[in-house]
Image (cartoon, rainbow, N blue to C red; front, side):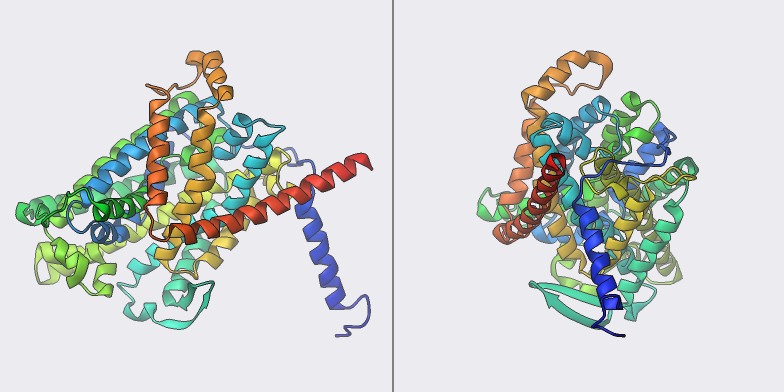
Amino acid sequence: MDLKTPESGFAARRGSCWLNLKTMLQASPVEAGGAELERGLSARAALGLNIIDMVGVGPFVTLPLIVIAMGGPQAMLGWLLGALLSLCDGLVWSELGTTYPEAGGSYVYLRKLYGEKGLGQAVSFLYAWQLLFSAPLSIASGCLGFSQYMSYFFPRSGERLWSFTVLHVPVVFSGQTLMAMALCCTALVILYRKIRSLDRLMRWLGGAVVLALLAIIVTGLTHFHAKLAFDFPAGSFHLGPAFFAGLGAGMLISAYDYWGYYNVCFLGAEVRDPRRTIPLAVLGSIAIVGTLYLLMNISVLGVLPWHDLTGNLNGDARMFTMAVFMQRAYGAGAGAHGAAVAIVVLIALAASASVLALLLGYSRIPYAAAKSGNFPAVFAKVHPKHHIPHVSLLTLGGMTLFCCLFRLQEVITTLVVIRILFQFLAQGIAVLLPRHRRARRERGAKSFRMPLYPLPVVLALCGFLFILVSRPNFLREMRTAGVILAAGALVYGVRMWRGVAEARG
């Protein structure tokens, strides 16, 4: 290859990169080729979608983490407070989702509540920008959880093939990495079709997720030992610094496990009867999943002592906590092994379902941002046959493949901090502003109205702030969020500058 000639491969690639950068920075008008999203998601399917998004693999791999964080069976307090926080925030989502039943969820809410032509344009852009980082992390956490449980059948898949560190974050490639990537690719293939064809699939997968939880709960309750479940260590509820540090760490994990109750809001333009469907899916999923989580926590600790989770089990056994739990419940023999295999399969299926739900919901946000002219126009393209935002879907899928190289614990922590800062706090504050209070009065009974407004909003904001400031690595994680914010602000500034220059020219 001749690197000296202007028409060489190097020069062509350099020109292509510049054209791509130029396209990314231009606020060009949206052209979707006439195709539109369709309202094909029923209330039952929306509820199932939220449930599988919430559960996924989260509680099955994080139960030991929350018990370790809180130092005993008082971990159930983390689940209870996580449910209360989710309920308060779910009321916010229900009200906003029925007021603005459009594709994109938080992107639309932030743009409208902060002002479409002023601050709202900047805030909503930054939200869509951080989503390019946080959404793949969220989806990758489901893929990595799936690969961890599947390694029950492939014990050597966790061995590192190669690894290195980037900015103090370990990057690992192993057999588990390949399984996680394979699940992501499979999810992309399944979602590349009309949303109506997914309706029945989402309902069946939602049932499978609930079945996995029920299997654990029934097993635990039929082999229950109260002395194990409620064996609180001395000073468990002493309200000192250690208690609140543990509670903060526990609530961070439970917040991650509950997240997903808002997924239907991202699909606001694709649900039937949004005024009824959205609150039902949001609040109903929180009530169902919260009850199941609490029962699961009690059931597992009634069979598997918390001392084992915090120290007696080695790392590999702790990774398959639910399989160990089944073996302890049914004792030695083929029956115990069969029960362990069955629960591993159900959990792997639950993880697969969550990846589908997350990719489906998050892919609508860059689409909504581009459709409003506040993001690269290519993300607004809708497939002419399937009526889905295929460019947005494939982009998030590709970035998820890269995030599968990180370890699960780092993925969860980074995800929670970024999401709280860029989404939940910004959205909660917006609901308290005069603009939304006027919208509440004007719409009246046309949309869902949260009871006791603004108390649920204030409680949700306090809960999210507590999770942030109680983190021991709070400042380090804030620096990561600051880098993402600075990069997004730079890109937004360049976009605005080019827009003004083109208008003048």
